[in-house]
Image (cartoon, rainbow over all chains, first blue to last red; front, side, top):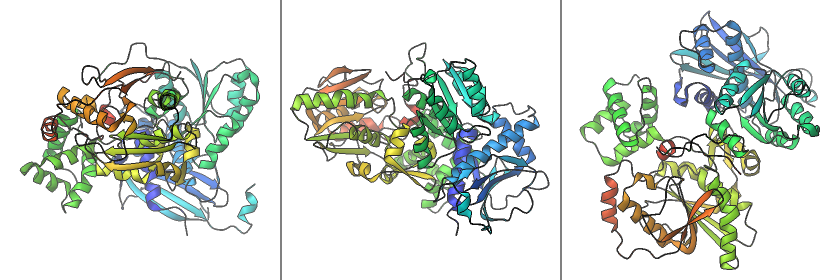
Length: 159
Length: 131
Length: 311
């Protein structure tokens, strides 16, 4: 049973967009059919501790560029260097992930963000909450993953 | 007034820099706690450090602890600017010597209000008008 | 799902007239999402709701629409100086004046979502000793904001606004994605619905009244009527705290100006006016003023933009 509720993940994502991107939480709305095609960008952070998991953001490449421009206060027609897109999406994942971590009943630590065109294979995690959203007509999917109980005791990893 | 913005994300450094620059700050940047310590040891004097928590090499909590341990840097006001938002984490940062705590995500207004609490927003040149 | 163009134009016009806030094209989503709860209550979608409103405009509905679109987060310890004055000047002065302070009664008027009364409670918790019984009465015209204030649950974004970190860790707990005000703090604050043109709420007579950034919305006659109601509800020698751009000077001579650090307070020294406005007249006058007594749009239309530095 996941300690993390769907509405809470959605509220976190909306607050992040309200503060950092649009000034209004309503810019990010539920979109049950949201999904990305072949041009996806995925950013994620891992949570270590008694609860092992991951928070990921998935959007389309054009949306990732638009998000980076919004975060960096750039003009609509400006080209964003690839490393800026990666950094901006990574920071969004970091902010969402940190707030997701705070929902956990027990204290954990946050890893550094990663950005790629898909999640790594074989991460042995199951999606415990998938929150499909739309931002300015683009898909934006927030997913919280829980890593299956590893063979060694998880608690031993927590100092 | 001079500020040091310490965050491994350039995006976040740029956002914080823009906010502080609007208050008239001269802004310096470091991408992790060790780079920031190097700048301070090299003689950079700042009134304010905005410190992320999770960073490679030396994290924000360790940075705060190291700055507080050095009497030469007593005048530096330390504001954590981080996505770490558990009650217990805020307690830890304050115990280590952070003066204020801003949770990401934040707005420019939120950062300004925290700096006002610390007396770190310069007075406006002209008196505030009435709308 | 998309909003009709004339729906948006009508709502934007209404909000602009009544609150001076502009809803630029592109904010259709805001109108849609903020009005959806009002429309749903009447079993309609937003377009149908606004069409019905245009066909038969009713004042309370119009105000509800404006309020839904102008509510915005407010800050803790807003403007700082009144809260410093409370602990550094008002409490010591009352203690000196009365010999001892067995009780302290505070009224936070037009309290919106509760940041002001809870900020007052946090300051006084650190200032008063156990011998003083504290009670704070917090009022607003809007049941909607009072429900949120009573719950004492705030979003991360609201918590970030001006709340000193030591106060956050002392008086709040995490509750999922939100933060919850502690029970001891909630116990000293009583929230009530109240119109400033009605007789004062229960909980008085008050030693301190916060009435900030409200009078600016009224003309002279209504300002005087409101201040007269407030004065009647105060203990003689009590302190009234107004917004930075507001004064009793030239409006009501029952108060004297007192400088307290960077704050300016108004001490209740006089009697209420003998010929005060009857409630109905005052109401009629207030009805001519855009968006009269709710706290909702004060948050954005507030006057001072730069707050200065703490000493």
